Image (cartoon, rainbow, N blue to C red):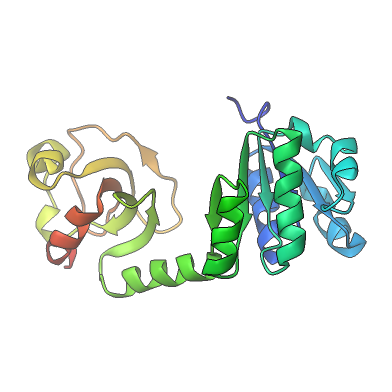
Length: 224
């Protein structure tokens, strides 16, 4: 589905919800942003296709602004248990295909899963784990766990890979690693699907995907 056709509803416009709204807007997705606080709504209005002051616990208000037509909704009010529960239940009743909910702790997470959230995230916990993994590896620049088995990781190319082509390194066979992209320096445009003839240079950053066990097993090889 193209960016122009896929729509999102963000319920709750604190730091978390506002950040998601801005990021989706940057990727040209259509966003309905909702909060009962008009100050939060006004703050995010320029980034949303529709920024609305509404009560997310009121299904009729959500229906009136078209939340039922969204492909995905994010309940971003993780610290307000009752509001989040009502919002998730409303979204389920409205038939929103995919519901993401923010939870502040494990208990909230379990509740949201039981009432039908398709994905529940704990931002502080997930970010803490992510930062810890970066700290213990000199090469890992960024890490995103796709699931319990696979991760996408941006690494600084180990020195032993310098001046060798991707074809010669054959990382898929040697390490079970697939190279998705390469960037020459921080902040530079990522070159997707590099040629097998590409020769690794010092300080190249590789975006790779592999089994989590592979990264743990070969992390010493990544460290320069």
